[in-house]
Structure formats: structure tokens, C-alpha cells
Length: 264
Image 1 (tube, rainbow, N blue to C red):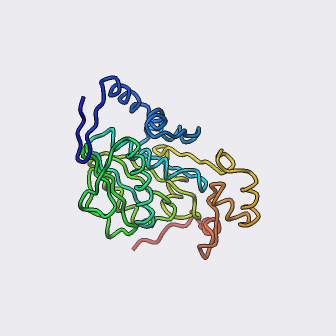
Image 2: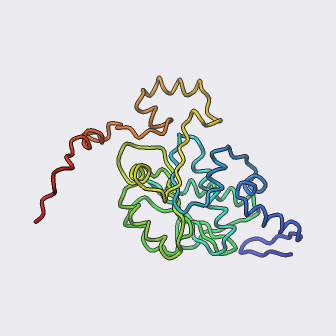
Image 3: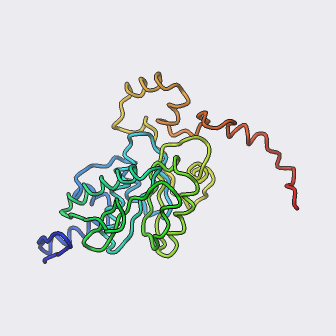
């Protein structure tokens, strides 16, 4: 069988094609055999999840961007013509996840090119696109029928950007995944984690459960950072980190639910 693309042509026999089809049904096996890395237990759970809405509340250096890139590449390769969007606080951060995706595509023997419209984008031979978005609400509109939306460092993304992106999932009934380390008790990431309801798949992975982060390093970080920042950066805690004048707990304690709002 000869498979032709925009920038490459390669040959595969029927056995190879069948093996790849089987592997594609199990994303974990696909990652192992095609991308060449071994995910840990938590990453395996995320890769196999078919949730339409997912939240990864994870320690720094767990591999959020890598797993996000793997999910993006699998979606783009296995579903021809799909659109994958990557958002983050800045276009540079979004482009970094796309850079990892490009490296994975090269391992698959695929050499994508830009889509001709977006500065940071990948167009695959099967018509799928991956686009890295800037971090401002006013410059992301115009996309539709999105198959997969990844928001990296979501706790630091403005609510306005998040609200502008969600409608893009409507027509294509796309999936939405938020990936971040916490940043205070505010914003859509905190709200979805605490109050999003059963529609969200949630996973929390503190550094103490990450096999790639050593105990000695964490103890050094605990001493250098102090308890509050260490809990936020490494233990997935939503803490009052001093970025607000009044802490979230203090504000909520001051509310009196027995008082009705004035109506004019």
C-alpha cells in the first residue's frame, strides 16, 4: 500500500497498516510503539480517557505538555481533517506544545507544514490542523468545528479567553482539556475543578507521586519556597498565594446567604 501526503510518501505492507490501526485504538500502546516513550500510571489513565471534558491539576514537571501533545497528535493523525487548538497565557507557550507535537510527528514519519494562515501551526497530509493560539481574547476568534481544545497553564489564562474559546467546540462537539498547576483560588480553572460537576474528568498528581521527581529535590524546594508556594507548585494545592488583596476563604466567610440581593 502506498500512502501519499503533501510532503512525503512512504510504503507500508498490509500487516503494518493493520498493526497501526489496532494500536490507534489503544492510545497508550500507540504512544509506546509509535512515539517511543513509556508513560507512567497517571499518564496512562489520561491517555486512555475518552472524557469530553478533562482537568489535569498536576505538579510542575509532571509532563502535562508532553501528554497534551501526544493527545493532540493522536487526534490529528487518527481523525482526518480534525482541528486541534492549543491555548495558553502566551503564544510562545502555545507554540512550545506545538513544537513537541512536531517532534512526535517526525517520529511517525510525517513532515507537516504551516497551514498558511496561522503563524504557529501544523498542517498534516490528511488535512488535520494543529494551531497554537495567542493569549488574548480579541485575536483568537474565527475558528469553528474544533475537535480538540487544549488549554495549557490554564490557571494563568484569563477568563475572557476561556469564554471566547468554548463556543468553538459547539459544531464539532469537540473535547476540552485544561492542564495546569494551580494559581490561587480564582479563575475558571479553580471553578471547574471545585464546582464543575460530574461532566469533568479530574486528575491530581502531586510531585510526591511523580516517579521522575526525587525526594531530596522536593525537600530542597520546600525549604527555598516556603509552605504556601511549595503546596501550590508541587502539591496541587489551591492556596491564597498573595496575588489578591483578600483571600478567597476570607471573602466567602464574609458572605451572608440569608440576605437577598436588591432588585431594581
